[in-house]
Length: 119
Image (cartoon, rainbow, N blue to C red):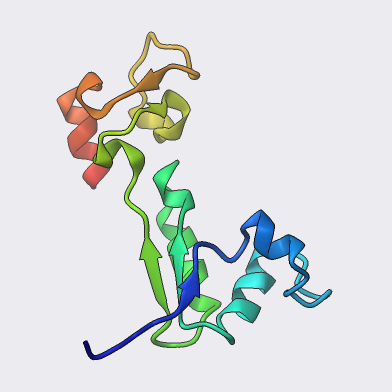
């Protein structure tokens, strides 16, 4: 094994916030990520399991960390055959006629939507 990386399962996990580890000036997720990346070289991004962030979010994360910082991005829950709320789908891809609170599995949404999710 060439590299061993150490990090946590988020830079904004409640238990990490409650621990008092962050300085007082790190009040928002962006400043916390900057501080975090000075101590660790990797982090698991758990939020991507629940919803697909916009492309610009990834660029913002990268801009707040040092070169070589590793984001271990958790797979979107539908891709791992978990059920998720319809509201987790980007609005333009949500099948019509269902309540936004409906829970779906990947095989319950149209094939065209499944393909579009990968794009």
